[in-house]
Amino acid sequence: MSQLLVLLHSLPDPRFLRKPEHPLTDILVIALCSTLCGGRSFVDMEDFGRAWEPWLRSHLALKLPHGIPSWHTFRRVLSALDPHC
Picture 1 (tube, rainbow, N blue to C red):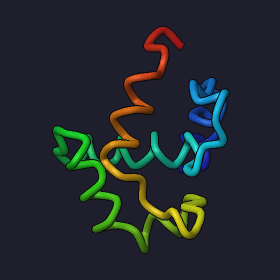
Picture 2 (cartoon, helix red, strand yellow):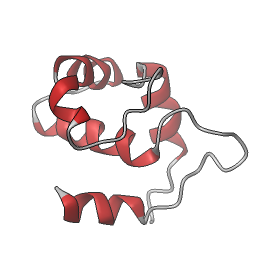
Picture 3 (cartoon, one colour):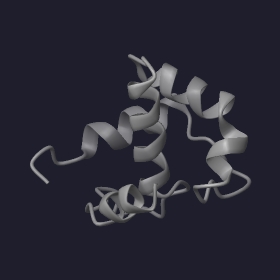
Picture 4 (cartoon, one colour):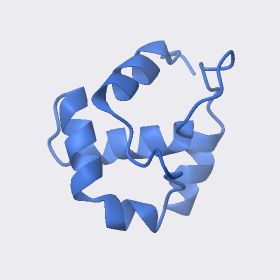
């Protein structure tokens, strides 16, 4: 997990003009884990995060009070990523 976090932390964050509530690494890890477990939508990503929140908290920041990102956040952030990075 630590190698994955280092790799994901090196990706440029497309949200440079705003102060994000959720670290990019948290969003990417939850999205990846959800997808690997059969998730197919942004809603599935949010649902996965809520279901596995205790485990995710042991590996990710998941800053309070924000916690698990909403499906809107997954959609907005993942849509803004440069696929060529």
